[in-house]
Image (cartoon, helix red, strand yellow):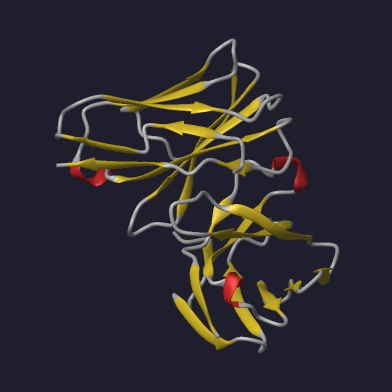
Length: 112
Length: 114
């Protein structure tokens, strides 16, 4: 158990819908990261937050957004969902912005 | 544009033998490399890393070798154990100061047979 909690574990929705994925980092970790793993791609970095502020951005679509709240939990919002958004979404946390990552067990999103 | 490539989707070895997992990269600016292990229904867990100023790093049964001129790294597991059966991801980043923004390979599934 990495200490990073992701909810829900599984999510099934339809195209065009909007969903929110939630992540609670390890106790004391200030940095949160989101990664996407789809069948035809490896793990792809989406975005990083550190202590509530966006720190780095990867290949995150404009339909996706994220935020980190004062209690340090983070949410990833995915809107206007497409079939190709079906993937495993991982959250990771680290104590600081440049330290070793601890991954959650992921949220499996299925868009039908 | 796959900057980190693991060309072998799977590898099967006998318990007690050596497992060698390979990884190639294209971006010469990468200077910090990591290996993660992933079991089913779990997130990736950090295994071992290496800075580009080194060519070898060892941690118990796990050794990572880096060949910068060939843009190639490999993970050696000796001796392999059935509990090592998992998906192994190679990852790269631009310096240890940016270890969050990792570029991952596609992964190699290792099966260690008893």
